[in-house]
Image (cartoon, rainbow, N blue to C red; front, side, top):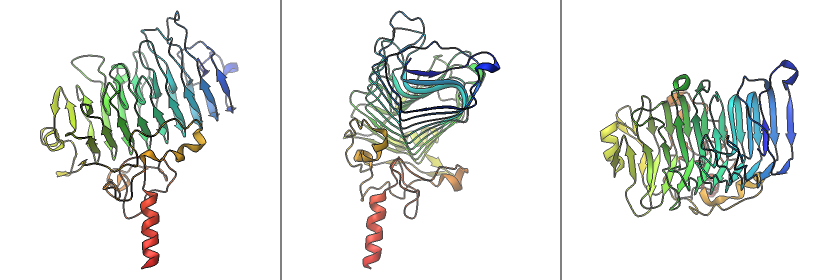
Length: 387
């Protein structure tokens, strides 16, 4: 592993404070272990972890960038993980750029994870894995990974996985192998599976190289899902032709899509739901009740008017993620002020900023996607001054 903080037995091994600021690490390996939340108040920041290709003969997964487990209270921020995991050959699991498992109250933010690979499974950008509770992925940029940009995975034997959030992130060209896409769920039945997840205000680009959908699930059991109470709000999903915007093979109770924007270049968006492919948002809405609110239609099939879809590229310095303007809303975007007010409708505390650092909201309402249009705000202020 590139950098791993893990559970160890006995009070003498418990960290009450752990601080790592400014690590530039190449290669490396640490053993992994299951266990309780021994460590408190962990901080990992300003780290660059790369070229940890993995150990092909290792039975367990190898080739991760940054991973923590057995932690209650952690922040991982301003880190970059890239080009890890290529030699992982384990079929029990795979590496991820930056992730946590068996942990509570973890925040992973302002990070870039890209060009991570695997020889078998995973190989994604970010992940909240088995046993994560009350944890958040926010303000991150994932791109060009073999696996999902953002994974929510509950493995067999893990403790409860619930009350996690994925918000104000960007994914570009992720899911290049294995049927993964931008944001993906995968769960066993362990401790009730994945419960009470909120995914909102993300901007997701599914490219021609992506093998999965914008938001999807990979089922561990062909006839049943263990993903419950998933709220999917105010996201933008843009795909290349022939790609699914959503792919949920066995919808369990509680999937709720509301206020999202679906756009496929040159085609109607395709939504795969319970094995049926719907070629229009209205058809899916009528058949399933998704993208409705109090009986009225919500959600959008229209071009969101982003600055340069697919043009994010590598930033290489997480402190400069705001310079990646490809997924900002143009001043004439129909997504400006079109988002649902998640606070008033559902009591969701959405935070005070978007991916780019702009305060939310800017004008008279909330925007859809990871960008709250500061450009539109500035032009509105200029016009108000002139008038």
